[in-house]
Image 1 (cartoon, rainbow over the protein chains, first blue to last red):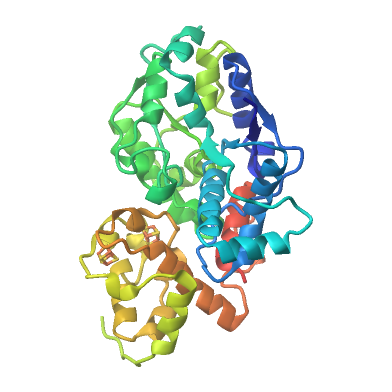
Image 2: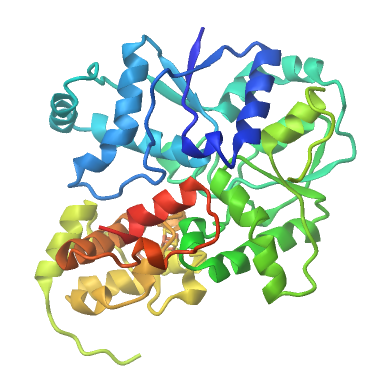
Length: 273
Length: 130
Ligand code: SF4
Ligand code: SF4
């Protein structure tokens, strides 16, 4: 069954390697995903204002287009897109009056009904299953100690979570299938500071420091994520961390698909670009 | 901390309307503040924001830094034993201020000048500009 793929803005720029590696993985595992011919920015953060339907237009328009093309499942890579799409769908479909209002406003689009299911790419990999993924492994990641960082938006709020919101294990499970050794990592669900990076980068640097040091204390040699904003905060803010904590040593941060494509033999070794 | 309370239930009504949350569901256990990643930077604890709203001190809440330091991480919402979504209340306060003042809390030229991914800029603009 073909699945619609919604990339979101950042996957086309700073997170290009996330998209490239994920599409290669999908191709090699036979997960049939196809980018939507037309999509708009989801808004990146779900609007929490109940009285402002305009802010839901971005995500809902994309969902309506996917439904119009006959898709019943849509996937995304970015945690923020995932969360925004899921929460927007829940909000709009919860109330028939709201749904009708938004459909009337977007009269040029096919009606949105809510049938399209939003699944994060991690969920698609989970559904592909242990056996198939293990079979596809070419370069076993044996001995690689990986800290799986989930951040906020794959897990919270509960209604949007892809796994248990306090003790998730989907990424650890995936890393184990690839032969890697996921480490105990209590800070894996702690927020990195998110959009504060645009206004208070020092706060984000301090958050990132605690998260990365917690990974290191538990023996990790690298941290993986599925969010382009977490990735930026944990990776690019390392320069700011050094200004605050001079003894800080670099910690590699990868998208989970970069590590995975290495294991599947698609790329040689991942670069911490 | 010393505050002068000016009773104002109009602000509470607005915040509840925007957020769809009921502040009186909160029984002040403090779990939200215990897990908040931004708490060290805040001038009023997240549970105190709710307490102030409960006692009609909404005006004092509008002046605090706390609401602009909230990163909408939903940790409080996921952990609240009473099912209060404090992240939504925080947005309710931010929206009340942005709409009333009709001016940006942090205007785009005041944001970080070094290159940022779109995702950072768009989300910051959604939270800090009107
Ligand atoms: S966790 Fe919930 S009930 Fe407890 S203080 Fe926070 S909002 Fe109130
Ligand atoms: S959503 Fe805001 S108040 Fe709640 S835990 Fe996160 S930063 Fe703190």
